[in-house]
Image 1 (cartoon, rainbow, N blue to C red):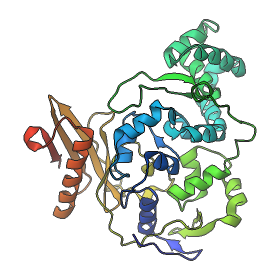
Image 2 (cartoon, helix red, strand yellow; image 1 turned 45 degrees about the vertical axis):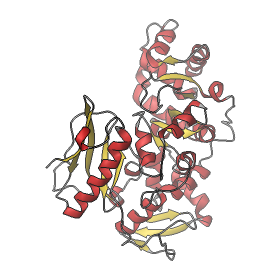
Image 3 (cartoon, rainbow, N blue to C red; image 1 turned 90 degrees about the vertical axis):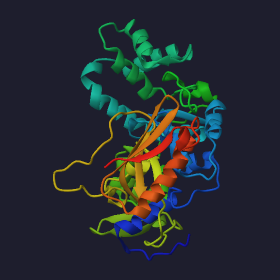
Image 4 (cartoon, rainbow, N blue to C red; image 1 turned 180 degrees about the horizontal axis):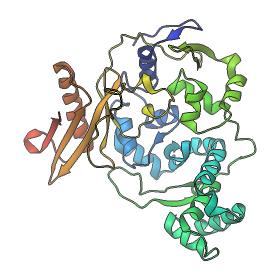
Length: 382
């Protein structure tokens, strides 16, 4: 893959931004690197659906084996926890310690944004310490944590109480939740206890390094893009501190785009392969202006179509580098069907490429089937 150097001030169209994003996301060509490397480079994978990170890594890593990621979770080299935008992310153990202090204000702000009335009059520090004591005795689901807290504050609702704890006490969701093809309750346990390490909230809250890492994986980007990805406030001030070391471009509307030096810029005409990604992949959630990856609405006032159902084994696919439709795997009685729903008609060559990649996805995500004759099929839905 050839890349180019662009002069500062260059106006970047959405196709140039698309190819740069795909290159940084390992989606122009699968990379021969470790899962730990990719998880770290992408600053975590959104993971409220426990199996989603496996499809995300399969689409990015050559020869990815699910046991590699399961092993990271089992060995405590990776964890699942609430981080960016107060959503569950899978991150390396190192990034758990780095990122959690950075987003502390995000979690507390969103907690009070949703539950200010229910938590009014409470000493939240006292609630957090009571919750920490309960969790230190053993992992608990949010409901049982809330029940334990209501023994002390019986007039309060258990959900706001439990969230008040996890917003202030860094917690992780231990295995078996998140292991490959394994179910498990969403339990919470203190991150410091799980990893045997202590957070530094005094020194670790500065977001500068995190913003640079975002730009390396998702840039070039505006300050508003950074805020959408992270949930942070005050991003403009961070960018101004970093500006002397950044490269500055512009989008087609004239807004400033910031980037780290040396980031890849493939030619805008670089071919982009068919790729299947999980429903909450951060590539589609991490910009205020998503035109670099999302299609325009089919017509004014129209909504894009959806596939029925929810949960893991569903997501969106890329055609020519852009989101072009949805997919979902339906499994029953040893058979697996990959339903592919394009937003618009596809050329024959594109359908063939998606069908071939879809067969590979089924072989990965539904390994109990080995071919169409034994119950594996890619089916396009008009």
